[in-house]
Length: 304
Length: 110
Image (cartoon, rainbow over all chains, first blue to last red; front, side, top):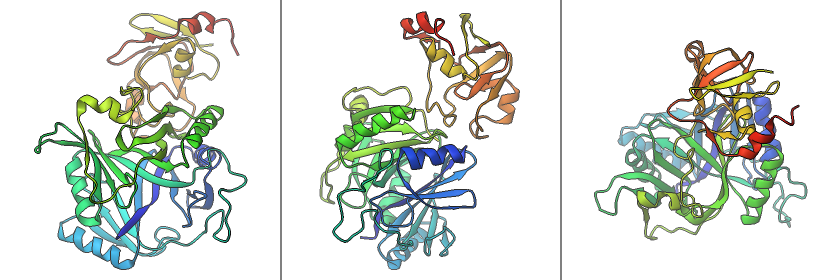
């Protein structure tokens, strides 16, 4: 297995102090570094130095990183990406604080994606010696870990091809214009492991980020998170509810700069031989919001 | 306190001190298409026809450019009127979704 998981998401925020309040006290991440106008966080169930980076100035996507198992895996992705003509740059250890050598691929959608195989170890908040089930004094919603992101791209098939051909990801679910073989792909959910998605792509007029998500421990924690959002006046886009796509339970909410975050839990285990699920546009409301069965006026139009 | 008027219907509401246009309209039971409510998505832009506004937070240039600000585009989730103002929504109408809130909005201020 080359890529193991989405390792970090780096976004811009308009007001660093407000964003710190959100990611530390509402989302409940642990700050591990503040340097050069950037703040680095990890969740309690993560062991690497950071999984979320916020940077003051503007709003929206900067880049994300995928952690590979070995340097050879990074080299393998580099070989494939170069052979297929994607712009690839080497990055050296320390270019991103606490992140080792790696590569940076600029996708045709302009999104920069980094691949690396080492990051300074920080450790699980519960440790690894006879650990408890969760930290005794969690803050806010106590998000355990970064899970996935959904990117807005102008050409889904083109970007899906990169992830499938160069990183070994495969699709678990797609939205297509019809059930015909030659249908156009509107959205795709790509996984590298057994989760439903490590990255998803949605056709859109601009290349942006729709949301990035934290994996929660279950529906109880999703409901609890919604209560915390009410207390903290965090704008909720929709939820708590369930997705038809992935079957996951969810809340979409916004950080103080307007970047969309998600709490996600559930889904089903995926294997490479699992048949791909296809949704058609007439069922898109149910596909995205399984209970309401209709899209709200924000979901397909708001991104940063 | 600034008075907010929405053209062309001429609906007007009184805003509280430091209240954004979005907050004031929703407090009076009105709704229109909004997104993140935090200045990031640019969906809640309207035309500012009369008056001036100030922004209560930094607003990203990619969301609202200086040129847009100079030519009367206003980001309602972050804009706090400095004077009585008149705005016009873009490609939609203001909807009254909670009449009860409109009824009581004027009775509790501050």
